[in-house]
Image (cartoon, chains in turn green, brown, orange, yellow):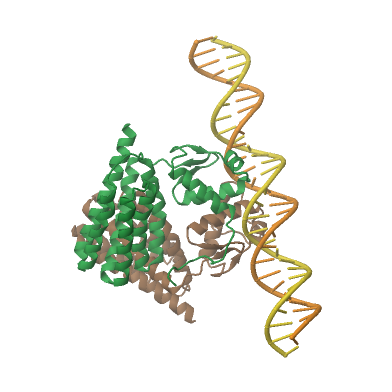
Length: 228
Length: 228
DNA sequence: AGAGCAAAAACTGTCGACAGTCGGCAATCG
DNA sequence: CGATTGCCGACTGTCGACAGTTTTTGCTCT
């Protein structure tokens, strides 16, 4: 009741496709494959000790998530994001988040506010504990995921989750080196403040600023990484 | 060429996966498969005279587009939309279209306005010519697609195209019987009027009304179809 | 030595086959 | 007569293989 688990509570052996998809996702996010690099189905299947069929299906899945691109008769390539696409991605994110927060302030719920509040506390704790960046990014995304979940619109949530994969790809493009650890976590308090104020305009301003900062952070980071 | 022959649709020139995807999409939109119906890979492959591999990949593609759902070890089923999901879908559409029209009114371009204008004229012609509903729906979607295209944000366009497949599914749930032929086509003039006014608030009101009408139309239509 | 061409290697798209699993049906037990 | 259990058919998940295409390699000619 506390957690709505979509899957069965019992052990369900996951099929190879999902496992390969997770493996590839991690490999791409951790930059074990370079952007634009070609993925050979045969060698991948060989490395994993399986046949090509599950590899192909997993690759198709990642293609639909925007992590891979396929060219006919050429195979799959790790998606290489152009600088222009970064702006597009964050612009779409802005549209989604504006809609979500507008819904939340319209149908205010203390329970939702409490859940979001707990998540921000968690983010601050993790930031202070000096966890690696991957964990911090995940907790950040989780906060926003909670927002979309709280709207009750599953299709909206799905749109955000689809976008999340590309957001992780954006982050992955930046080198590991950078600062600003807990200020990012703390900045989410402002969103909650705006929500609690009950003013739609404040919420819009807050989310515009929040996403704008994130966008600038990523764009500048990628730019520096490309110059280097 | 528009109708797939019932006997044995010979598919052999393009990518098999894409062709099967198109074939299945048409079959679902035309309600040749009932919502919730199970799709057998073997029988489908047999009907099309091909092997299961392309069928599986095409089904995965349609799953990512929301036309099919897959249950592990059970196969693929035609997505059966709940009434609640209809609201979610149009709510997301509202978020996307608000964002698009806001962008267009901010970066006004007479060339864009001309293209949209031509499309509305075309829609009115088609409505007067008494074409079938499928064609009218496609032209309607094409108008909105032009809007997203004009924003220059490809990711936003992709989000709309993803949603378009589900919108077609919504329409397909309604029975063929209904009226309001050219009034829908003409209603798009109001969007153009709002755009030309250059007022962001007018645009937002116009798109809210436009999408709201479409949503109510679909929800009521599906409700009537279910009662019947 | 460099450019162009041809052969080969590698890869993808597609196919048929096998094994494990799921749902339905019938036989058995209470 | 109803509920349970074992069996059977059908189907999915996965595999290895073949054919056509693309890319690489190696050779020849200028």
